[in-house]
Length: 446
Ligand code: ATP
Ligand code: MG
Image (cartoon, rainbow, N blue to C red; front, side):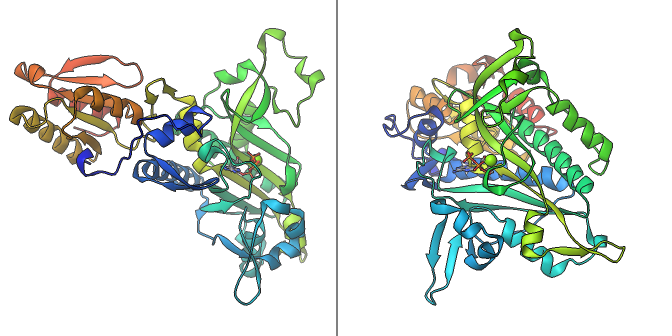
């Protein structure tokens, strides 16, 4: 993409309405624009990152055999009356009446709808296990939408639902989801710690929230500092292997890590004092096992192969896809702007032309642009007729991990400058070497 032809409405001033850094940076970098309280338009740069996050979420779900689909945002109230949640959900639910006077709602979640889909189509244990998921917009009329996309009213969520014959099978699905989530967050460049949590209005016994530690987080958390040493890394996991998934669950949840709702001071004090931590965290996901709560209420029964009709065991599993942009920025920025992890960056590298209109620098930039594009990478070429300082400030603000700077002085010696956004370090290299380095970083063969 050439910046001169892109739509990147960068703000010079720091918007006064934004209280936290991720919200400020997303507005300043021209990623989002508020449409009304807690509702945002995703401008091209923000949309690109959102799509990148979505893609990673899809890949990791499908790696585990979970099946993508798409349910609508608008739902009929009837199913929610059947489950008993129509009244229970309260003012957070946006209720709508259509022209025929039928009660509708903008879905805050999809347990009822998926259970209804399931029950109309599956009647036998032979069709289990089954996990369906979608990535769809949700609406919750939050009393205090704030912090930009972190607590929106309209927000994008991945929500997945497992259907299993027995509790044991459903607990395997729970563990399997934990594994997929660990992998997902790591690919997003985040450390998200599973913590024992409270099930709230979804109901159920087993639930973990995934928290990214950050001062601006809305959750209060307590944990054993040893937990921050754990990484999932590159492991070969067989998602159908019950023991393997259970072992990962055990490894990542054995140590004390809880949100304030389930915090137990006496248990906490059993950890050596030097390892006790209390901090704040951003909830980026949650997994639940809730047994037969919805299948009983909505009559989702299967034949168990022994002549009985039994309600299926279910769980639901959510990732806050749009909130993740805020969480990633909270975890990865400096005073100049965002620092995108390579896994989600909107463009792989920036090209800065220090003397636009100079035939040699223009040609060198074009060659770099073509070379990166031909490798299947997306460079952002700042080809505007602007001062170098302004171009650097924009690149730093929007946070591309790598920048190639092309100027007449370097070019005389056949050199360009390759700069890491994270470390700030620059090196003089040939244009070919710069391309080769970037290709290597993103796993492309030059
Ligand atoms: P919270 O406690 O933050 O209100 P929740 O526990 O009600 O969230 P879940 O039902 O667990 O939310 O939804 C799954 C995920 O969706 C959450 O882990 C979070 O990342 C995201 N999410 C929930 N509410 C919002 C919101 N208002 N804006 C953006 N993301 C949200
Ligand atoms: Mg939650």
